[in-house]
Image (cartoon, rainbow, N blue to C red; front, side, top):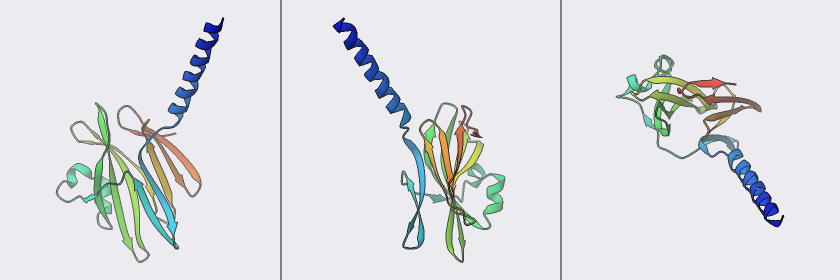
Length: 163
């Protein structure tokens, strides 16, 4: 009788611990827009260098990027996810205007042979709208724009799907 209660107790503990650990997904990439002294500051984790794309534009650019390159600098960040079918990298579009700079953080998936599969703007502060974003390790994306939440995920083929 006592042995059954001990087994039941430990089973219950394992279920609770498993539920808590599954509910707390670690971010692969996170962007926040914070107001400091009346100025908006963009912060992202993990911190990574972004290199302006010059010699490899044909690998990283979509048709939309070619149109935006006239008004924005487009930089590549590091790979933040890799599976046996695709990888995800962060692309940063930086726009300069009279009010300062604004940014778009784009998640871009690439096939194993480095062909673009899909793109998704996960965070930005363009057009007077602030959007923060997070990509969790379960490939779920949460973007919050002025209080409105948009959920998306990356499917098994590297496509971004909005819920």
